[in-house]
Amino acid sequence: MIRSLSFLFLILASIPGIAQQPESDYLVTKENDTIFCKVVGLKGKKVEFIENGQRKSKKKNIFKFSDVHISDLSVIKNPLDLEIEQPEKGYAHVYLYRPYVYTGSALACRVEYNGKRFINIKTNTYYLHKVKAGEVHNYNWKGSKNDKLEIHAEDGEIYFIRGSFAASFENWNTTSAMPTVSNGMSIFLDNPNTARYALLTMKKESPKY
Image 1 (cartoon, one colour):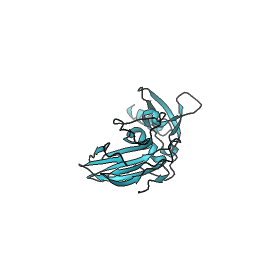
Image 2 (cartoon, helix red, strand yellow):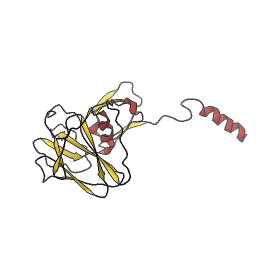
Image 3 (cartoon, one colour):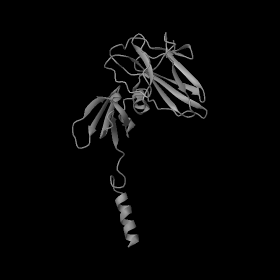
Image 4 (cartoon, helix red, strand yellow):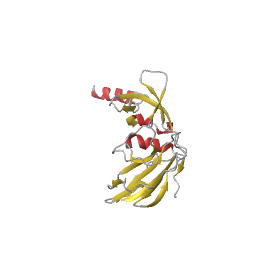
């Protein structure tokens, strides 16, 4: 009897969709409501998804959610074929990026690192900064040295800093308090649950300045 049941299990396991259901996508709102769905696309900040039991897809700003899970990364519009790199031992990674926002998109977001000229985070660009773990790394936009963003880098950790024009309609989704805005620009430590996906849609590497 046991042998018969085992044989039946092997037959069922060989049938597509029976052995293991595909991993479900989900979006978690800032009110902590979970939307189980199928994500069918992510381009820029817009995530397109079909809720379970629905037929038509919806598009929403990814930064409106506190958590996002996409099981099939091929649905992400990733022009540079980027991957989130894992740090080597003794290092941490700091990704600086700036998603597209129409208002203020032409304004420069020049960032200084430890008080020195560093990069210009232009719209739809990113930069990977590999830093030593166990140290404090300071970032600030040019002209605002009194408003530093400090990262106490831990071994193997990945941090995301978003640069953005501080328009009233911008969707903030941070893991830290918002710094003071200077000339309409701001940088802040972003929520990794959404930033890791938005980063993959960037089009260029941020230039030095």
